[in-house]
Image 1 (cartoon, helix red, strand yellow):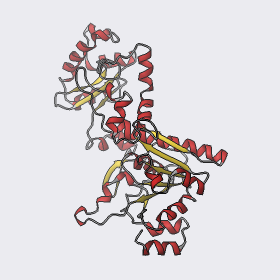
Image 2: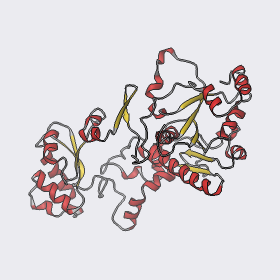
Image 3: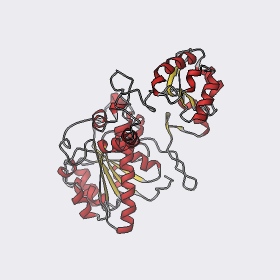
Image 4: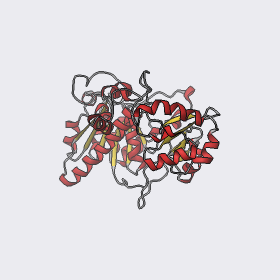
Length: 380
């Protein structure tokens, strides 16, 4: 794989969504990432299910049963040649497998050991089960999303799992790798989704401290309270979005949509926002989404159509930037961001579990005798 991280070697202990997304980001950027999978019996009814697991793209898979003799030692020998290890299990799981940070770093002192959990490695909730919705509840992020007098709206699992978890872990691991280059010493990165989703809310906490944000959903600048930062239904039932915060962009929005009522002049008067939302909603219902796009797309009105997952890959802007790629018949987002000197390749499709077990062991320097023993013990 080409990319800015070419030459970096990372071990991914395969778990659920956020850790694979973090590993995918490293692989997309050219790092060699090997997946340590649990062996699974083949399921003929499932067919080639691995091709749909696009979070696993760009990596080879080693399926090894860590409960068999010699398996842990084999992984530790892989650790000796790795720059980083990523795991997303509950606190204590890796230690019980004999692969905790102290053991791994005893074999490789420069190893960066990336740990991602919902609640963090310590704290009263550290060992409790949970999911994205719970972690962003604790940080205050979920409370802020939704309409007035309605329940909070679940923002899929973007904020906790992927933004506050996977991307924060990727940032942390890269920071620790840069430090290790200077000092020769690795360290443990403790990435908690509660911490990460709280950090993503930094600007809102600042607004609240300044008295510019309140605890009532749907009444603030960026949460759907403002008529000029909102989504609206069109005549055909499809939606558009506007985000004209700055006065010059707001003026263009008003001009383009023909909202000439003097009441719209008081853009920042929060007391008038509810009434102006209703009036702007009536305006946008007078034309179809296609008609509004013809009038406003590409202007400084801060406008965009709300596209679904079938439409987005075909939008001319996304096509011009190759925002989406087709890998093995699966349309998916391309690696991001872009680099001028070390661009990333199109990722390889996801591998079937265990497809590269022996090849990985050989390529990473494991002795043939150990490989034969692992096969005899049915560890691989």
